Image: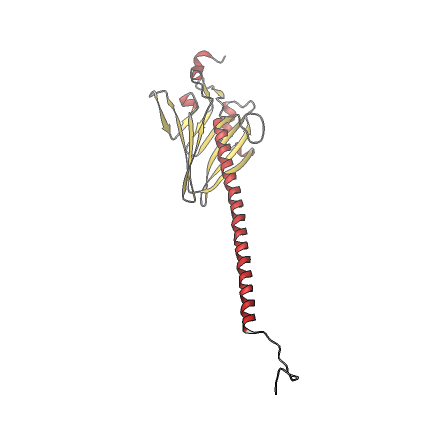
Length: 227
């Protein structure tokens, strides 16, 4: 009995048709996978560029804040001494800045190295400077009242974070790097503030070049005596 001519006629595909269909399907899957991979790479590139831009913007803004340090002179009643307000320690930098984040007026800036479970965070704090005198500033730093102001985290989970200060040592008569630098001791601002940190195994540096240095003000106490 001829199945092709009888009531049980079969309908199917030849081997060549099956192979051709499989080939077309494979090519389509390959092209779709390639397009998806390229799309993901493009998306990752956009995200990466965005993150890099934000990281670069933070660094540039921090450099601007440091470079805009103001030689704001305060008077120490105990020592009968005028000096520019600046406190640079191993875990904290406090200074007056003309480049605020949240206003157009000079501000007190505190950069704080804070210990966290995975290492260190670099936190930025900002308070209006207004008419604060030395006692007010000391109280704000002692009781950490600067945390009441504007704040945000510059970097998180750093493996290392160090502050260094380059300035003129008037006692030895030459410039040098210091682990601590205070205006009350040096009677001037540092010339450079260096922040070095390690993030995901990469060593990085931020330099703040202070541009308002006025060495004639080092003799402020000789020309201006507070009544």
